[in-house]
Length: 227
Image: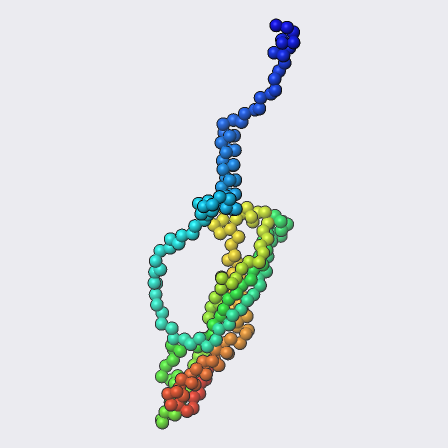
């Protein structure tokens, strides 16, 4: 064997690629599979795979249980629809907002009804003359019902949360909950309803309804008072 052949045998060959450990190959395969599933489900790359990896919603609710029935003795003479923009901010005195603090901009839509309670009327509440041509009714003042927030038309415009608040959401059963702004929206709507003259409108409409009803029964003079 000549010298050139010996040098060729002693010359080191190209380095072999370093093989990944078994656990590394498993992790890599799982990552590749997850990416492929996400791409197929997102972009529907293969026919039929969209249904395979798509999300399906099932309603497994139980039957509705009737708790009670209440007879209503009130006449709703008016209802108001309101909308309010709630800007609620909570912060820590000694920490920057980026660390600890929240600010939520929320649009709340709701309604309030004004009604007159007719269930408490007694014999002295209605006075009729001898020939049954005139009637006088003494009714309680109209009151406002509880403000009802319409969740289908209420929504959060923006939410800013500090780092600690975002970490707290990870362990919360209701991350980014909107209960505080919803309660505040209901309170603002209730305050606006009291200042809107809704109760007075309910009394006026109740008077019109009773006048029309009694006149259809033959009364020519109808007087409705509120106390």
